[in-house]
Length: 252
Image (tube, rainbow, N blue to C red; front, side, top):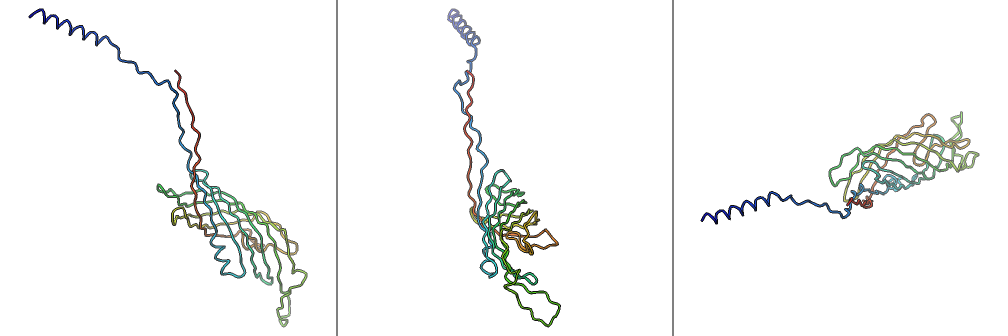
């Protein structure tokens, strides 16, 4: 009985020594190159539409016709590049002069969104800046001569020396604005903006004045500032630019 017990004790001791003498297996890193994929760039969105104010006024005001398209492009998290293009033809009565102002205008600038949206929303409460340019003409339809004698009736003059057209006029101005964009339905937005405008330069016709500038509205000699607003209906197209995959090889 002692001999088998001795043999078993020797076997157990030898097996224990073998186990303790072995080193843990070495983990070999994968030598194959691994692909590191950069996160995709922030989603961008193009929004375009029309100014509702021009459409509605053209229908209800016989002395006004115009159309304006608007668009903005999301270029960063809260920064948008914006553009507005329009045409106007307007007839006004200013003191003793009846005239028409017609032409086109272009506005380009940026919007900065200050509203923190919930996930899945894209509403805006923003401030912005526009640089605007107008190319237009002024046409004097008729005018009333100034008279000292009140007995003479006011008869409009339609073929006098001042009843003419002044073409190739232009003006440049800045617009400081605040506005909002609210989602009505999926990707459809209703917007509103209020603007403080300031004329930078203008080409004034000889013997006349820029009494109205398309895109700017009325102009007075005493004030180079003005106010404007618009209502927009726009459609948003989201899209995304993907970055290329960068491969990084590990050393063997």
